[in-house]
Amino acid sequence: MASLDPVLDKDGVRLTVDAAIATVTLTNPAKLNAQSPALWRALAEAGRALPGSVRVVVLRAEGKSFSAGLDRQMFTPEGVVGEPSFTDLARSSDTELDDAIAGFQEAFTWWRRNDIVSIAAVQGHAIGAGFQLALAPDLRVVADDVQFAMRETSLGLVPDLTGTHPLVGLVGYARALEICATGRFVLAEEAVNTGLANIAVPREQLDDTARDLASALLAAPRDAVIETKALLRGAQERTYDEQRAAERAAQARRLRDLAGVGE
Image 1 (tube, rainbow, N blue to C red):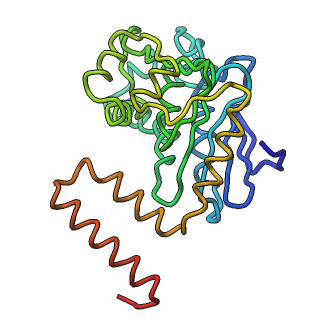
Image 2: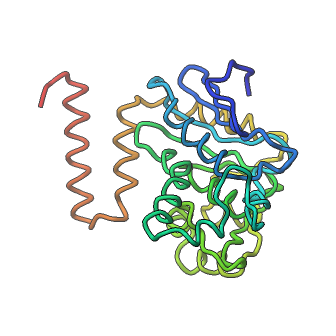
Image 3: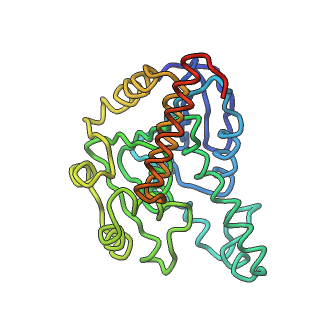
């Protein structure tokens, strides 16, 4: 990726912008890009800091692993300094606990906004929260050494960082249940074959492949991409006839826009 002045660089997250392409990089390879509430706040801030000119966002990570999951300190009684421990969260009220988890989820939700297309470039381990972060963008390019695993259930928890919806949408209910309940690794070949990843490439080609895909996504007019993404995202929730109607409405907007005719 090009070396650019960062728009944001804090708590293990760096955001750079090159014209219509933004890059969000996890920058703590010494800890395998382990995740914490501070990193989640920085990811959410990166989403809010995107200039309106950005059409494609690439999520990548420095080092040998994309993200090995939660910072292990979060599992200790003390937790991470300055943050509530899991014990503190468990002892809070229902509203406080729900609000805390909702705040964590904000780092994972903005990637599917209709005005951008997002790509995760994933290498090495993507475990637990790392797997869920890789699931947050629209598309995934993976290195041939990728190892996905959803370990929350094995720890007596559930995946709560928005990963369950895209996982079921990509691989289906039965496979998603098996992946989550067993905590097993999903490697590159299976990821591509099941639709979890769009393409697998040698590790040294990962960044270039993500960048090439980002450039290709810029070829179509922005408004057409926005309308198409909205159609596809809503397809599973609509009936066949509702989807047909949504297609007609979207096409009418595009035709009128291209013809310069107001509605």
